[in-house]
Image (cartoon, rainbow, N blue to C red; front, top):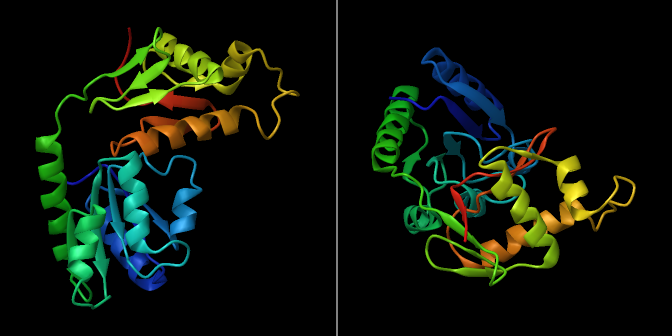
Length: 228
């Protein structure tokens, strides 16, 4: 059992090319990123089924990249790195990785590790618990019980997500609901509203933030959402 999609983040071009080719031959769709920033500016960086990361990366360090991913996704994360230090394994696992392999390592071993982690993640996956949109209290309630206070703009945005019932909401729809024209949507407009809402969720709960951008469309609340 191998994942359908995988992001490979490694600045060793030759290694990444050959590993990605090997995984593609096993039926995995692989996107290669030469540094962490390339992944994070991708249209949907948190949509992959699996991540294989180096630790010594341009952009933010691999350990910090794991922490960023864990805020947004529960997908499998395998670290394959040549970094050697007494505490590196503890730090990597503590950051949220599922397994750590030390380079040099055979591609077959990497594939087996991906398979083992992905099987465990898939088997342990349970139906996602509901996030609750409490209109009366003007709060978003996370499945772990954390309460996130919502601004007036947030309330409007959350109403749109409830109405969408799991489907993406276009930027134009959100602007209309907020009473903004495209010309009036300045730098402190829709993008800033979504960003601030994400940050409040991140500060309130360690759970993955279900609010995602959808390339060339708008935004998606990628979790069960119940209005109360």
